[in-house]
Picture: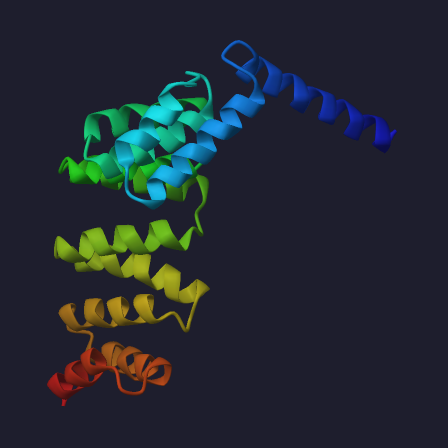
Length: 208
């Protein structure tokens, strides 16, 4: 029975691929287009990399839209980048990969509230995603909303107690909240990670 289930899944996967690519060129053509785009990207020939994929573009392909979102972002075309990343999000609404990608052009366009909304969506789907937690904490930190920043950095430190980036940012956050004892403990932990860390040493000197 288990073997039959695996066989059925394999057939379904193959059928899905044929539907996705069959009407717009075969799989090998698509694979070669992706290969060419990677080769052009290696030399930062962004438009050439884009052209390779646009030639075989399939509107309902998550992979095509995700990759074009990345390429257009690097080419400086934020509107097209946003369009393709948004399409990828629509195709895979529960995937966080495309949402992370969409943040690139949204941030470049200066829409910080939309960035926050996207990070909130990611955290709703994946509550322990440390990248989203850290980045959202950073957004609030630089907005001087230290209480909110502390909540997110604390979650990262709970998950990764010896993570330099999270430790130093939580230490800075506590410093701004005038929680000096907590800040001192965290700066000392940073020095266990990097005994000569100048930022931690300078910050501790301010606490003396």
